[in-house]
Length: 237
Length: 92
Image (cartoon, rainbow over all chains, first blue to last red; front, side, top):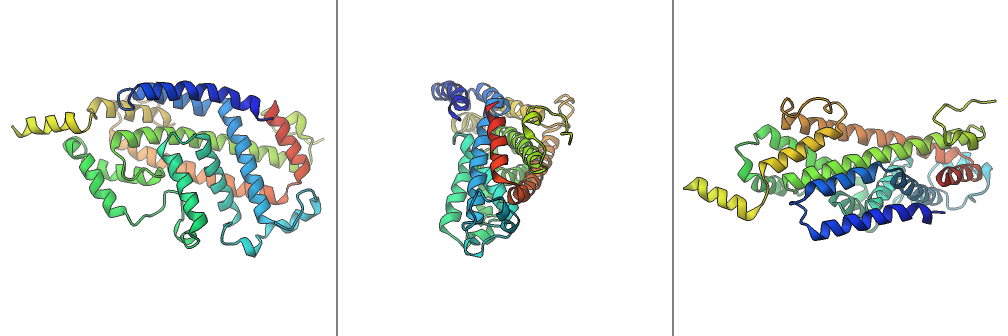
């Protein structure tokens, strides 16, 4: 089911990996950037992400109700409450879905970007250290290394201190906090990560919107087969 | 003399040029929906960075909303028909 969909992105990624290995990242930012843009905008990538997302959501659902069988429709109303035994590993409903979606997005990025690696690393830490769940509010959450980040960013921007005022430096720091794993990054790398992250986020929203529409249509009881490909609102007969 | 030293340090330690940064900032600007039409000389780097931060926050909020909706739908939807619909849509 998934193999024909994955074939297309694989050939693109091979070419991009080769071009990256031959040339240094800084000397050819344009080529890798264009490929990134095209990658996140291609429908094949979105389908690839959608299938990963569905699998992750299925797992979230399985974690939520370990006793209820997946096939019984009558178990649906009672599954809205989270089972208390799993409370520490599965946070509240929407949060679990958000984390699963982020993880699927990071996997779809194939680990080539810093933010994707940071997302996957933070998930691993969550599994082994249960106390961090309360502290990790968001993926780009607060870190005790904030002071270190300030001085390192200052060092990287030393040569640009004339052109970048204090305001811009502050904004750069805020941006570094928003993009996961990019706090101590130099400015050009941070900008590159940001462009890729924004494109990936847009694709994530597209895929999740399509999935939400699909699920809401099918749960409304209307026949989803005809509605799936069209963008028109479903008409109930 | 000090300017020469700083220049050599710049070329030796990091090959980051102003042009590269401007290029990246303009690329970032292309992604932002509000600033796409304006020319880069009218939009300062600070504005682009600010808009980017706002935009990323908005995207995060949208993803959170979608996650909430998805989690509600997951809890209430009938599994077999939903799975069939999703599989069909992915194949087409």
